[in-house]
Amino acid sequence: MKDFESAHFGELNFFFVENGELIDLLETHIANGTRPQSKYIDRFEQNGNGIATGCSILPKAYNSAANENSYIIANRYSDYLIRKNFHDIWWPSLANESPETVWGWAFQLNTLMFLRVRP
Image 1: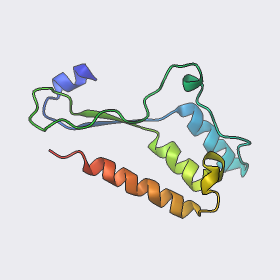
Image 2: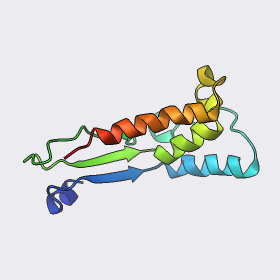
Image 3: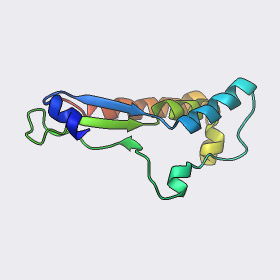
């Protein structure tokens, strides 16, 4: 990212990353009409090799000399699939909420996250 930022100084750059293993698992269950038996635990996290999640860094000022206006935003699509189809497994405390309600909360958080990034 540092090399990319150097070549694109003054630009806002978003990198959306996903865990392909999790996407495959979720899409397979959805296509087959089945449900996971338990919450998926990321094998990278199990082994202490953290994978980027959430938003990587808070934005710097647009004209900052720090040259750090790139952001890693992870697991937005998988979060959508989970909240829409399996939120009661991932978050049992929200099992009584509808998928639309739970996804609506995530959509609102996504909106707020992007609104924080302003030139």
